[in-house]
Figure 1 (cartoon, rainbow, N blue to C red):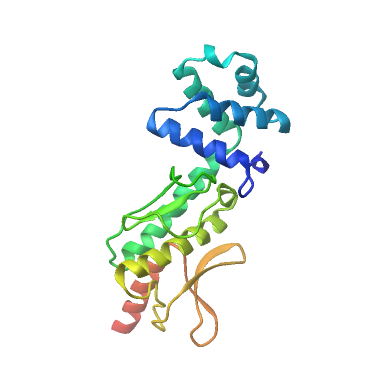
Figure 2 (cartoon, rainbow, N blue to C red):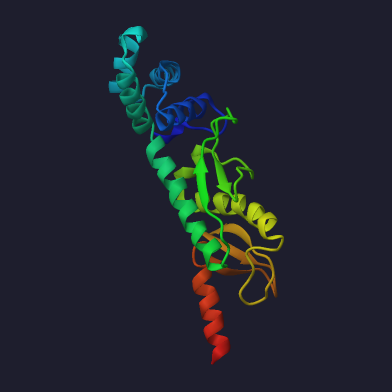
Length: 212
């Protein structure tokens, strides 16, 4: 089901246009028809696809276009992929808060990028590397990519290194280790400082150990 979304392909671009149109309440029929045609070629999502392709576009009301657009996103797995990316943002947000940094994260499909990739909003901007929908196929991959996208923006925001190893005070980097998304440190040999999302727990453990 998720094979329809590949990095940089038309499916992601049309899905992004549908998502933005639904979010803003002005979805036109064109991206809905385009995605339906692509799905027809790939033989997926037959029910909503046939209804779209068998009816004259001019006869579709705005409410029907919106409903069919939502059905296409569900049929292609967009909803589940997007939910994985949103969850990853919330997990990384926990690590940002654990460091006492006041920054709200969000993920969006900006209208200035027609590639169909998402961007992580941080500190009032939407910079950083693109996040493709296909990243949502694996929660660990999504976490690493979101964490990597956030890291640069946070360091620019605070004019310092983030995150840091609770033990060595060196900068960490996001990595996928045996299927788990972690923050790694190169101090005294490469080691895992914490799972992404668990930095706060690592900081508390380190503080508790020093207090004893």
